[in-house]
Image (tube, rainbow, N blue to C red):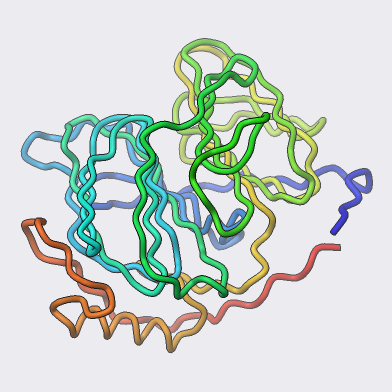
Length: 314
């Protein structure tokens, strides 16, 4: 597929995240949104913090199931303990990534070990050919670090500026953390076949898409850039700033996302919820050992809109 990048300037939109609560921690949910459900195979994005939790109220998320996705946990500040039904028990620390592949089914729990916490929690939709694969868990303690203009850069997923992340993916993806403690500027070249999402996590940044000034991006907003873009210019005015850049080719399969499941049909969602709620040992999802507290039960399945396959780009 070849896109005519000279035909028109790249399309962009600023989307507002909505606030939520996960395990007692306030989060900004930037994906999915009614207008854009995904960026590439990235189908879910929560940004939590920076927050100082009360000593008597840590973040605690009881055992819950997943299917058809990979959870990608990127920790910016603090420590979190991950446990899952494969028997994994892993402390996630600053600058590290946990990748949990749900495949046909897995369950896990999460607990904060520090009062200070900031993280990004993302989901990656698995393509149909592998979405029923066996579950797995991987921990990545060291990620590639380098400079992009004036920004400190950590490559989380994919290839960027001659570097490659050790985190595997089943579809082409990009994930980049860009941070600065002072005024900084950088130009990022874009893949014309990719769509992108830029979420400022701290501070603010002036962003130019191609030759078009998009104004100031701030925490709680996702700047979506459609395929065909050539470049992003980022400018932080001073002080501490941080942004997360996601990218990938548009996902060419319809995806249905509800509660903690990624599937394709209403019938699948009903079956997943019943399987988890009716089997104390989790059945196909397994059981999490070591977490003190109840597991989370699936709510009633609502009337879900069956996804429609995206239109091919031309």
